[in-house]
Image 1 (cartoon, rainbow, N blue to C red):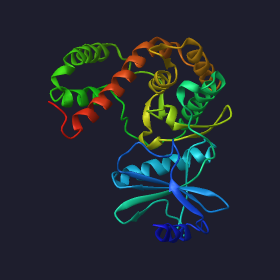
Image 2: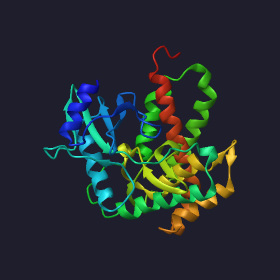
Image 3: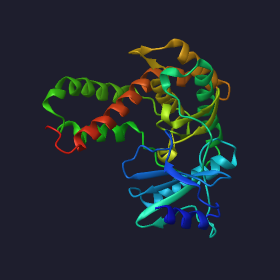
Length: 290
């Protein structure tokens, strides 16, 4: 393995390999089809991602978005180019992308300080403001229609003891179908911001990871997803955390009245989307009861 990594390092002009190990939390990836390695070259570190599950178009989209955001000083991963100016390549059937390592740590959400949560809000708003200038269309992966369709596909496959949950989700899909507002400010969104997507150094956000699902969507949905991830503690919303996240966000981008009106329903939709995503995992598990 070290020989193969040494050859890759040479292609990228990274220098001599000192050590190779698993990528730290945050960089370790959420996809089963990914292998993420941390490579130390003595004078610097890189993350090597080997991805066997994504098509070339998706990879190109992600790299293009990351390069745009980096150009505008957003703290996302920086894809490195090899000696032939390629940002990705095929290595043994897997797509390889090398990123510059970001020196920060992924926090445990329950241990975050209010100042850190405020920084997360500010970083999300920065993404929305910078992303407004990104004119390439990236299909919205988080539309209500798409989530409702995914729920419809798995509903009949859920185990019998999920009956109560299914009834609740049926009501939620029906409600949101009538009350979600479509005419709200849109642009580049993260789509799934949570604790392991954020790297911190002290109170400062130094990295926003997991932009594979970055796409065009409603800013308020993105913010609602962050609220559900960072402000829900011990079974209830923590108002101080919510206020810190919003203060950070509004320091860079003020929410419109229409967005405030839509906020409760977007919180509900964000929770529904995550639930449907988890249930899809349950249904696809080998040997799951029907």
